[in-house]
Length: 186
Image 1 (cartoon, rainbow, N blue to C red):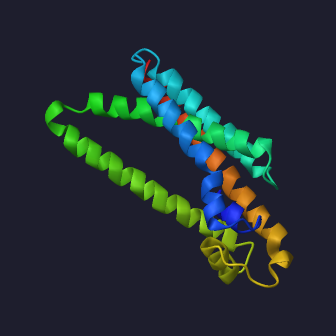
Image 2: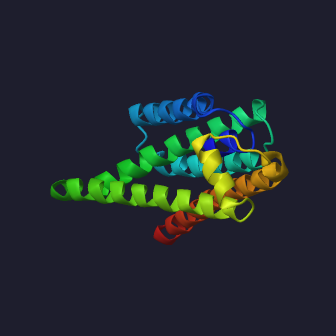
């Protein structure tokens, strides 16, 4: 989202960061609410809902070409969905680990989350770089405006849209994996 805001939409890094606060708030609120509810019997349903919201929010974001109400709806859906997914899945992971191995389980979870972030960002830059010259992408990431940018703006947006679609597909695949896993254990 930040790359889209700073790149094709030409918004400053500071303003772009402020504009994604609803994402962070929705993730925080959903994590807080789910964490404070007695969700023992609802964990799977919350995971399904979270992955579905992330999928649908990503699809909404893939259609965005300007900052408008659907942009914020998509952003909040993804944030809320991630909060709904992470909190119960983390609880399931930690409760499945024996008490003397919970530190190791938490460490592995952190490693996997960090690897996912690195792979995700690499994927975003790789996809967008297929549509715009690498130097344009670098300048956009740094929030630096360059001459001739208008000529690649539509291609840049197309690359960003594809990254949102890929993100949505990843959420959908995760949802299908969790559903298949649940059916196989039933």
